[in-house]
Amino acid sequence: MTPAELSARILDIVNALVASREGTVSVSIDDVRLDRPKNRDHGDWASSVALKIAKPLGSNPREIATALAEGIAKVDGVASVDVAGPGFINITLDAAAAGALAKSIVEQGAAYGTSDGLAGQKINLEFVSANPTGPLHIGHTRWAALGDSLGRVLRAAGADVTNEFYINDAGNQMNNFGASILAAAKGEPTPENGYPGQYVTDLAKGVLELEPNLLELDDETALALARELGYQLQLQEIKDSLARFNVEFDVWFSERTLHEGNPSAIDRAVDRLREQGHVYDEDDAIWVRTTDFGDDKDRVIKRGNGIYTYFAADAAYYLSKTDRGFNHKIYLLGADHHGYVHRIKAIAGASGEDPQKDVEVLIGQLVSINGAKLSKRAGNIIELNDLQAWLGTDALRYSLARYPADSPLTLDPEVLQRRTNDNPVFYVQYAHARTNQVSRNAEAAGVSRDTFDASLLSHEAESILLGSLAEFPRIVLQAAELREPHRVARYAEELAGAYHRWYDNCRVTPQGDAPVEAVHGTRLWLNDATGQVLRNALGLLGVDAPERM
Image 1 (cartoon, rainbow, N blue to C red):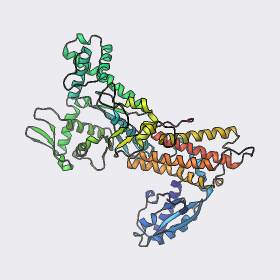
Image 2: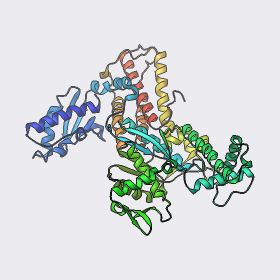
Image 3: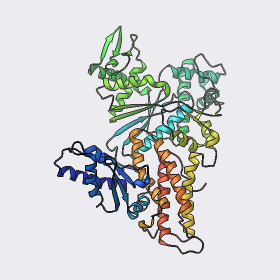
């Protein structure tokens, strides 16, 4: 019996009790969600639903809990029910009901842990969004790992998610970028406000390979060509770097497209905001009254000289997401973007949407890695490419995903490169590899999954392992709802620990010349179920689940 199945039965019992007392309280499946007691002596599951509905029913929680306990005790698979404290209900399953989960997990496979908890939500998830004027650095690396993992858990919870990368390919920075490449192609020093580094020289070589006659063109034409070809080369490197990091984007949105056409998307965005009543003209400029929505000051959207501000592009981009049908937008931004929060929420409000409901801005903190060296190519940053070559994709992705985004983070490369239990990613991957080794050994010993008797999974270590496996769907949904994929990583470590302890206490293969018994085949189901859940958890973090280590 899964926690979801038990919760559904309890919900029926609660609703029947409410109806019998002619109550009007509305109870949902979330109200009867089960928790694991910290003390396993208190049972397998605990519910606090009695504390939630007692007051509306005009009774005390303990009396309601006692009435509910009588009904829960009659549910098939429930061994005992106790009422504790002011009205907590502790539930213990019989071994067969608890053990049945192992077979269910294996049969569900990769689908175990998924749910429809966020079904109906169409989410645009924007992250990384680096300038296409240089390689990705350590800060982008953290957001790439967290953003991609968040997208995976949101999808597992039933949401329709689009991963989006906003390419900042408009503005003076692109002119400076093109001028830097052209100067490098000519063998000249980096111009003022330009981009230095070996990578610019490499881009210049790439541009000359694509356009050998570049230096024979007039300066204006050569600059435009150097800018465009260099941009395409650098953008492709960014895409390649992210692909090697197991990060995929569904949409690469070019800022330049917002400026194209007559009227442009930006022109249309200003008109739409004006129609909403939040645009006014003052001092020869066009303003948006963003203070109506919590911003610290109104924002200029078009200067007196007729040039649009960055805020205008932000507004047009936000509205493009709405026009594409996204009812919720999530932005993942770096620690230096706090000022952006009020701006984007003000845009949402000014466009007629709910800033508290329709848009969400997550701010991450800085990350550092002891001993990491500045890029030889870029000279002033720590590159994703170098980190990946040094530490590996799995170690980087897992380590960056196992901490909350809002906590500053320093990683120790010595720990990440160890093949010991104090390296979290090794600890979890080794547990998965061990489940595969146990399966191979079982096959060699003649143990198969032809037999399954859930009641045989009665050892205390098996009860603990089954309880941990049962938690996975709740953890995934919680990680999605709270936007905290690190919960999946921490869960995987706890599951690995429960599995290693079970491995030490419960044999899947007979000892010596002892015959193969039903308990061995049944335990093989539990072993394989654990491997499946570890694989599913690592998949949500974008980390490989090796079969051998």
